Length: 201
Image (cartoon, rainbow, N blue to C red; front, side, top):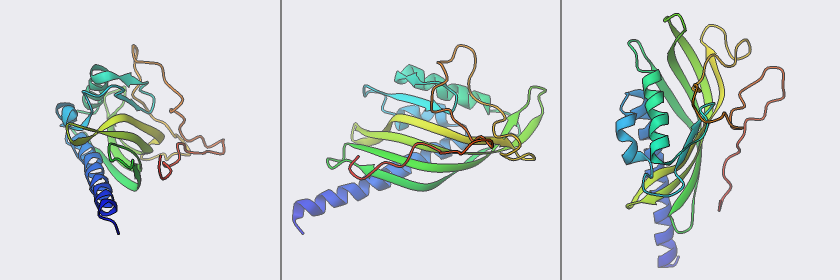
């Protein structure tokens, strides 16, 4: 094997490790309430094209928009008795040949505590897909395009067939809800897009 080929393969393996660690750190910071303060470490704040969207949040663009989205997320679930634990499953990650850009997807399954309109705490299951584009900024891998597609967010006691969606992120003044918001529907043949990135993508 040529020396150049070996270096390229090693760089690809290091990128895979570093990006998986980045995605994992995001999940840990989210669960522990640290995420808003960690955004500059995780997101490509200096690179054009930064954007984020989660379920029905609408599309948020640029450092200010991304900051507002995750500040809202942290505030919404920061409460006594709060729980925000998401597992990362079935990773598919494709890194560009020059190791400057990557596209990754994970399924996620989580347990949340949410607050009802009456102020009571309720348990919720949720499932979805992360579909993210990563770039290198200042020598470190970071999120450039961040998406989370919801499949269901259901009350623990009911399940996704009885009540697929219990509540969401969208509020007055948010960007319009986009086509990525297409949760499970028990009356339809569901296809949970997007599909994983193909090699070389």
